[in-house]
Length: 297
Image 1 (cartoon, rainbow, N blue to C red):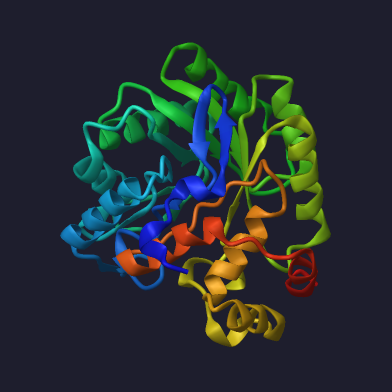
Image 2: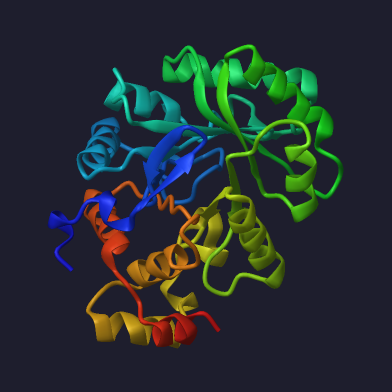
């Protein structure tokens, strides 16, 4: 595939509330550092390199960015890089961020925010991004307990004009139904990709029925998670399809994910312009029905 000639528009579009985005977006978790993300002693990435990746993404039609204030390494933060690279922001750019988790200045994890602390996290994202409102804020959770208080706190900030749209991350189906009784939910971010468990298939299905965008994370990395994809972990079926089609394994994984439904968005991340172009080009790759079944077992 000639990645340089393919833009994010090839993947088609979906709506996040009142905003239309290309289904092939960009996740910024890997931008602030080299190697594994979200660890205290990460090696900072060169700022100019990260800025170049973000600007190239927008040139290629990416208009949906995923970020968080806790995406940072020593000297670098994803939000700061986005601000530096793209402000003043294009009118069609949608920046989605996450609240709930937090890290102290040395990079160690803090307890998840209480309802009262969520406003501070929202305001921190506003300051770092240089915005007076956030396009999408996802409440990221751990566990199965009720999210009513925390989601309700974000709904109040939405009513106050600090947030345009609300989403959820790392949830179960009952969380989505509970949240929808409080405020509209435009997207769900869960770990999903080839080999996903049945529970995640159920979340994807429910989102489709409700018209909610399903935004997988780690769709390329899989069980590698914050450390990234491992070639040793690739299944022979995925590799076989990649060889036959003359594309990368990552492109097969992204294409398979996007073909799980018109409401599925992809947010692959990278700190390398060439990999970015390959990922965007995956939006034009259409696997046959047989190939989808072959790699999805």
